[in-house]
Amino acid sequence: MAVTAAAAASSRFLRGGTAQANEALLGEVLVAGLRDAMLGLGGDLGDLSPKQLPAELSRALSDFHACRYGNLAIRLPRLIRAGHALSNGETDHALLSQSYVLATRMLVKLDEQQLGWMAADRARQLAEIGDDVLTVAEAARNLAVLARKAGWNDQAMSIALAAADEPRLRGAGRAGAAERGLLIQSAAYTAARSGDRKGMRQLTDEATAIALELGGTMLRDHGGGFSPVTVQLHLISAENSAGDPAAALSAARLIAPQSLPSVERRSRYYTDIATAFAQLGRRDECVRALLNAEQQAPEETHARPAVKSLISGLLVSGRTAPELRGLAARSGVLA
Image (cartoon, rainbow, N blue to C red; front, side, top):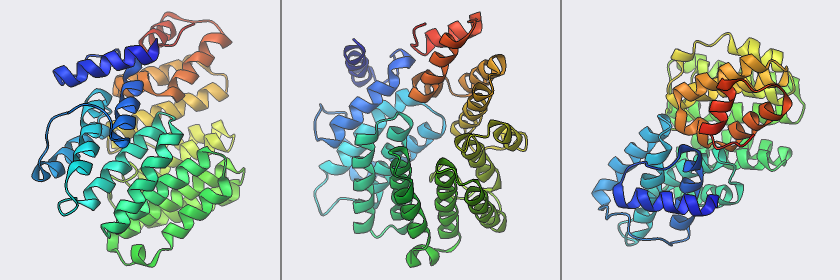
């Protein structure tokens, strides 16, 4: 039934060009669109000329930062399909690789690892062809994330640190330094998943030092941006993964949510706090954090499987206040 509903919602997107679906199904709609675009299937989503593709990618990135899943369900598959439709002489490999990097990030969010591997590998190959050093590194970072989610922690660590030490990246100036920081903080998260708290904190300190030296927010379109505050945001997730939710909350107290560079990062902040509260059994505070995430990014909160799983756990583990039942209903989670 969910697949049928998602297909119907996708059909409405294509006809009307607006997000009309139940937000709880937007993730399925987006995955279905990306799957078909990557397989070369599906109907015409509107012709895009080569000159239009950079602006379309910019819009897709803006939609990602604002957590507009309904718009992405239209725009991102269309961008990938249009990029592949160009003749070899016209193909902008760098732009298409960046489109695949964005697709990978969405597929990771939506727990679609099989398609995520496919997208990340395409991003890496296209970036190499286009000699786009930063996107090669970002594709490697996404591959490391996928390896970590598969439980291959040693391989994830090797991928991230090898990419960070790539000579071409070291020669890419301030942007290259920021991308190195993103790769190192990804390795820190992997260390946390491996139970290596000392390694996690050492790597986090290294990423923080790079961020402080650079100053400001760098690479907003890679990994959600890189700055001292985004490294601190990453630390919240790492402490949760290391099994220390109290430390995660301590890390969160050092962040002013409004200082984060996008809606997507602010939503991540509140869902990470909710995860910490859930681990500590502080149900009411967990629900409040989820409601804050929903206020920031309703489409993401309602669509992400990780959030749905958290809500489902709350429903079966204790009393269900009206606020929780309402959030569950909006997220398509049945009691």
